[in-house]
Amino acid sequence: MSVSISISPLIIPVFIPNQGCPHQCIYCNQEKITDQSDTLVNASHVRNRLDQAVRSPRFISCKEREIAFYGGSFTNLGIKRMTELLEAVKPYMEQGFFSSIRVSARPDAIDSERLELMRNLGVSTVELGAQSMDDNVLGLSRRGHTAADTVASVEILKRYGFKVGIQLMPGLPGDSKEGFFKTINSIIGLQPDMARLYPAIVIEGTELADWFNHKRYQPLTLEEAVLICRDACICLERNGIPVIRIGLMSSPSLLKKGQIVAGPWHSAFGFLVRSDIHLKGIQDLLPGYGEVSQIGIRAPLREIPLIRGYKNQGVRLIEGKTGARIIYVKHDDSLPHGQIGIDLM
Image (cartoon, rainbow, N blue to C red; front, side):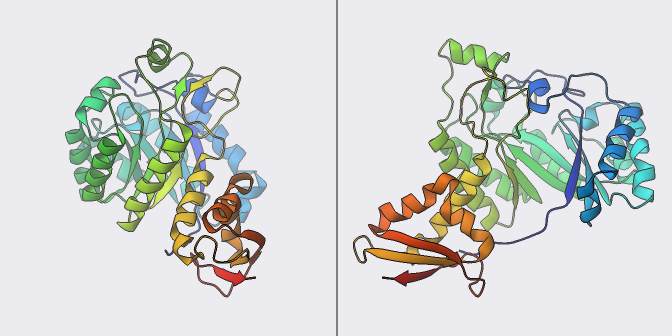
């Protein structure tokens, strides 16, 4: 199994929690997720955020830099506010500090007027919060849009020349593993440029927390979520759709005791999934159970953490599959990405 290696741009996020959202989704608490209040974000906030970013040491070391408006629905802010925020970014783009802008949007808040404005003011990528392609799941989650809205939005965004991202949430109320993979197949048919996978978790203060407390909702376990995201990621990437994020980003507010009520939360969730993908890809290269008593593993340097896994869980899994003790895992950059060398002992 080959592994594509790419250098990601430095993304400077500007959070607009809940702004432009006409509905309160059953699972959502943006204030805790982003660690920001829902205070109205204006041009001054944007300039302060970008000035801070430009002064950071990491900023200088990255050649490709992007501004991202996250946390709300950018295209639902209204033309006046969209213009204000994008005009605040414009000088930083003209001076070469940033090369592109991305925004998050609802699938039912895309039209020609908004797209013309964004295209003229430097936006190149629009990420749609699709979450599911099952209308029953969307209804139970209080999303307020349909799968057909997502299809229509992807089509018009491509027509206007935008890169398109799709955000998906396995484990929502009314969904199942089989149902989620119908969503994956639908998304593959739309051929977006990228995807994100955010397993649903139960956050204090949400309607979903109330459902959970009254036994109306059962979230995925961590193990279930890792397997679903692993297989979804494999399906998407085999069809040319890179998965650029797996798992919800943490914040100090979200990590306070009692804020995550239930669900497949893990601080290194994306790494768990990527490690599982890698181990699945190399399993046919391993010796059969009981064939040898000891082995050494060689791999490209950057893939050694994926083989070892979180707290060496990968090593223990390989030992369990082979019945052999792993003597070492060392780097060998003569090997191609996604391949390993096995030294029998």
